[in-house]
Image (cartoon, rainbow, N blue to C red; front, top):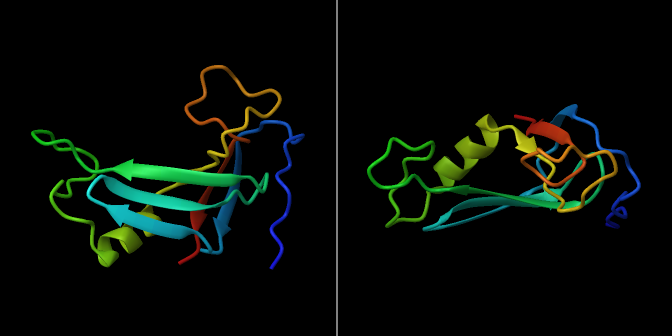
Length: 111
């Protein structure tokens, strides 16, 4: 399977590309869960890390820092989160105050 080239000349735009096929890789360790794949809009490599909750706070991810999140927790994360392009390339027109350096795409995974 050939991976398309990163479309670096694509203008930045906040675009909801909807639900996409889940062809992303998931890795988990005691620091959190990382979801890695190819942006469905610009075809750039993208990786998002969800850190574990901070001790003493409610935290978005209340997993214990002493254990690797379970497969069920990893699957639940991918099923509920909205993902954003984090290809690391500042696409033309990207506002200075964006949280992610990428093309502006966002998506969820198909169930």
